[in-house]
Length: 200
Image (tube, rainbow, N blue to C red):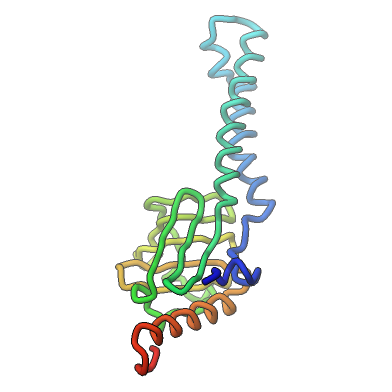
């Protein structure tokens, strides 16, 4: 069966905003570059002294930080959700999770306003990637829940509790539409597995 998220743009994860890439460029490229220009930690360690060493130090810093930025910016575009007959798959930067319908607590799944549910806000990064306006991977909430997160700075999120000891927090373009698609696929899957038994 074709993945629902591939057919309906409302179900796709919200991508990182341009301001997020700007903030990351400032933190990862501009700040180290200014440090090299002012203090010259790389240039001073080169065998070439004087202005040539300083210029080489700046070039090396720019090359390294620019390459790291390019890799991370590319990974931030790996940010998607797939819903099919078997379950849901989330891929975001370095991380990927596949959940079968039986592993999701569909009765508790909700669209939430994160400001109204502070106990679910991801605050501690355990094995995740975070820049201003973007979170990806594993976090702990304020209430110390384990969370798998794929968000881009929005307030309306889809909360999916699991039976595996962690919750999933997603930011689709339309959280209610994705929840509806997940509920429909889960009900259809359960009805196929157990004909005649009401879907939960």
